[in-house]
Length: 257
Image (cartoon, rainbow, N blue to C red; front, side, top):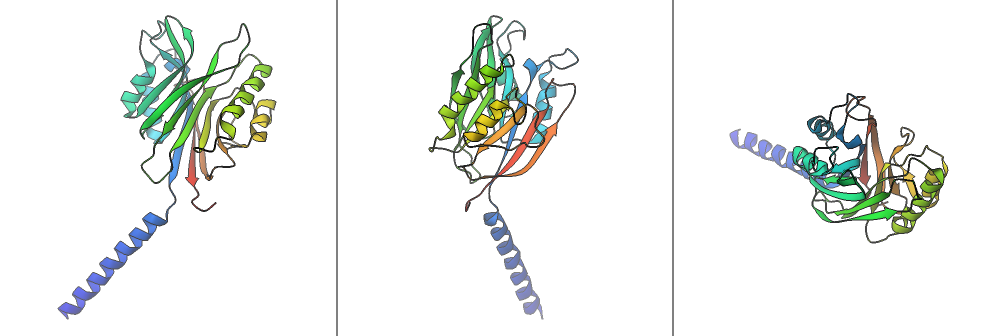
């Protein structure tokens, strides 16, 4: 009788391990992408508060984050390297990309990643005299959860001119829409409404709005040629930490699209 119970116990244990292995290997890997315009860390209460932003970011458990309106060593932000401060507070890797010099420092885009960042490069975007310079920060990240290496592109398009936004998205299409070396995700504050000319030009270029229909001007876009499937989208409008919501998209990588 004892041997029989032992035998049943071993069979049950083997079955549980088998089911666990099947579940683990059968689950296609996922990626949580966050885009967040942080308004140089100044909240709607007039306070610069890095801990508040870091708490929001960490609570959402993103794998990669595109940040807009990031100061680096400006007098406005008391000389703080905001990207590195947030990287330290969230325990993530970080890269900054300058869009312009500002207030004795720099101002532009930031990327955070819980995965290693292999390289990062800031691409200037076209603009006209009297407009703020803008950039697209591209970073190659190397996941450790079964996903392929991928490029996250974080950007912030012109808020002053639709014509300039059109020029900027055309430039983004030329840079990233048909790059076959890595999957590419485009995220950021595009200052463009759904079905506006800039968004439609991106769609014609092969991009898919992963935040629809919840997005307003903050987007995560994937390419139709890549193997992503949108699992969920969440808009977190804190009302105090920034003048923009944090927009989170969870993606699944389809091994057999």
